[in-house]
Length: 482
Image 1: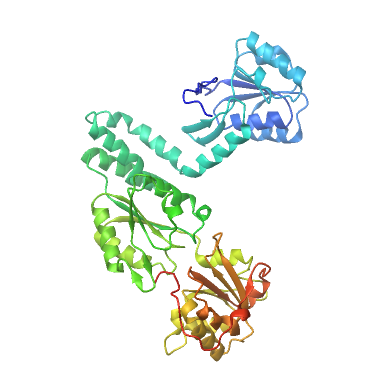
Image 2: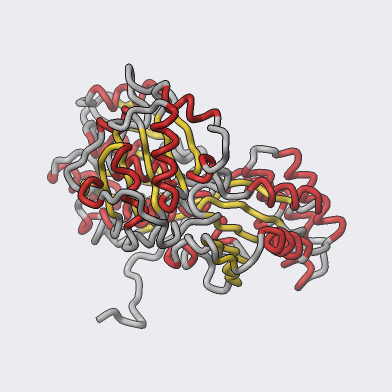
């Protein structure tokens, strides 16, 4: 059982190493790993070995590290701030550790915790911000796993933001203590200055910080139109995850799984605005108005849309409303359902010599009297990804065959693309109408049509032909947004 009052045996500190010598004894992989770690700092590396391997020599040449090409002697450690025994030889590492202690220099012996005065952490570097993860030498692999998770959470621009913040410390000290000063820093790190730094607009970030300092007013609202991907949590982008962790309000569609919504801040307000075929909890106009209202209230909002917000997600209407209202916004792409469905089938959407173009469309595009322009591309060999097409599958197939596409053209169908409960079907364009009879398909359905589909992996899919029924009527809804 974990101990509630467990105490650390190694206390974490940050040592000043700017311009100081750090000695590394060894010429192999262990020494190179430590050299690469220390090269993230401004220390002067002193590498002591007369048996340096080629990769370490290349590192020394590239970085300008000091190389003492001689058999190790205790005198080589003098003047160092830290020492690393990384020879891979126990006897030599013990000798280095003993010499370092005699000289009063903290020492780390690689993979020999009993010889260590300190442990090197797994490091997340956003200089001048650094996050160090240590396990007192008990679990280096665990430390690396944690480092990877934390690294994904932090914006690559965090270091630049921290540097900008340092330049405003003196000016911020002139603000009244308490709420005013806290509000400035909160809005600095989560408002317009942070967004401008992430976009690479450093001068704009500086101006935004000055505006905050002068007005000391609450930050303006910001709306992020975020693609939630096809459903699997691990297909969410790193930027989408960071924004969810910063959001005051999460506005999400019906097809966004609860597991993804739950990745946001625990105290964020969650507003469902689900839209499925024939079942709209809010109209698009009401959603537009809600986003504008939240923006005017100074909220940081994530508008979660299934897949990619710019692919059949009505993002254009929301962008227009926000632009007209003067609300700041950004668009964060997501993995669209067509890509997830193709991955589920190991299906190349483009294939050299077979298909060099593709079309994203909805089945409802074929319901008019005239054939849409993209149908000509399908006939000439383009791969066609059909969203929202299950309830009009027969019409899609009939119109394409009538236009000249071969009934034998390969078809792949995926329900719940990317999720563990996905179902896969394969067949031909002639088999496609059977989808309309499948009342058991209640999740979103993605259909991919084209000659490139023949290159898919059909081992774990069911044949559409087994469910072929001619002239069936539409049954259950697609389960996708309209």
